[in-house]
Length: 415
Image (tube, rainbow, N blue to C red):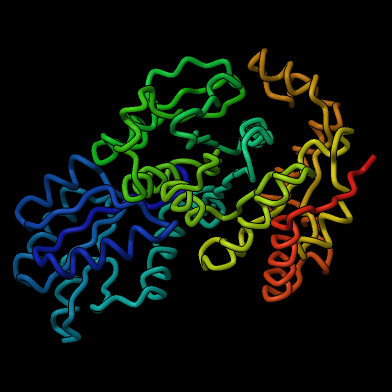
């Protein structure tokens, strides 16, 4: 595992254990490898899972907890032990530290204090310059309608990132019914998102990578389920567990969402760092984009992540001018990708990413630039007007939506 501390937890008290689990699952810095409700069994759990950190809640039985810490200090010296207790009694803290605990935290745990403790452990075990401290960057690619090139862009973003040997990159095909990322990569997967979902609690990092299909570019693919009957097994809760495991295993995760914007898609968009919303400058697509932007404005965990990306820029037939689109939606365009149908079709048919198929093509350079922008390597090209206030954006979107819904809208297409 390259990004996180692998952690095991023991607490006989269900209430405090569940609270700690919820806190830990939300942290990029750790992966909860195992949990245990009995002090007597925790030694076996640690020996089997070999976590970096063992968290021991002492309040159920301080004597048993102290004895457990002493045993683990001898049996698993590489596991850093953190003792937790509601007690602030000096002798109790001293006993835990003398038994072998490296850190002592008071319950209920303060999030900032826990993070500081984990960072200290990371630095002590692996050094400040180690790649483990690097957090996973997650990107979702969504489309304002079908056929706008989301999968093409998602696959090429993933391959661009994977071309850097310092990166480990996974692509998740979340179009559960009709996803075709495997076709773009000319791959025949052995396992699907369903297999990983059903076995996520039993997978470790090595087994996870063996369950994914590795492309020659270095990109790992997690494809959609094979059978339509299997779609119901993928839900927001199961997806969060899968993404949590991927986040702990890779430096970058790219998610190609479906066009239905289901609960599963929205759950994924809440978890990522950036959402690239792909559009074309035609009337139906822009109308859908306005509706989506208005909806996202009501979603606290999504609205600030959305970046509008225009694909197939320069397509001659029926395009609305970029200036008109900007004025109507109340924000600028984050990035533009030129139209190059022939090159993209060749890439898809050959199963070779653009960076290999046509490295000097303008479309390749454009998607490489978008990749750098989304991961923060370069600053985005939105103008200040594109970063206008939320109220202005929503109001303008509403006007554009009303315009689309008029009886006889007249839109001047770009000739």
